[in-house]
Image (cartoon, rainbow, N blue to C red; front, side, top):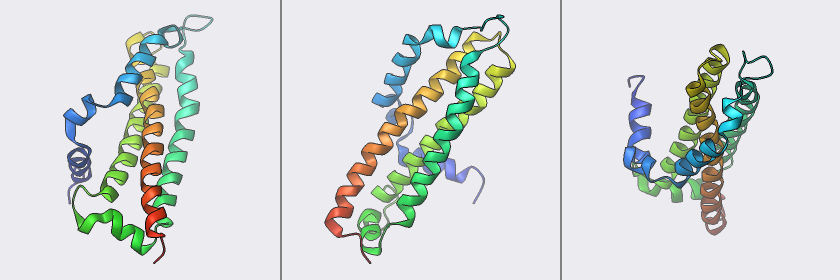
Length: 165
């Protein structure tokens, strides 16, 4: 398996560009980014810094830790009957795969946001970079809501199956 194979699987199960462009979370993030432009355009007291980058460099790692912990809990606490139910016979686009892909998407968005925040901190004169970093951070936060919705859905299945082996 190549280094890019997980990304191909992710993009396929996620639904590709079509699913991304249909995402309410993506468009909500665009609106929030546009509405918060004074925050990410701020150049700081001496006009040679980018305060939004410092905020993002604090918030995103904590959000990433939450994501990884949540994914570990979902996978670790799943009983055999529950896992079999969401695996849907091993379908490539099963609910199990969609849950894992949603976590992957969440982590990927946050990782891109973190890297962009580092660049924004390094190049404070680039307002567009601060805006894009803010967008990815906002999209990461919005994706947390998508994960919560998915967890609610799979909790209903867990409740029905009893989740036990």
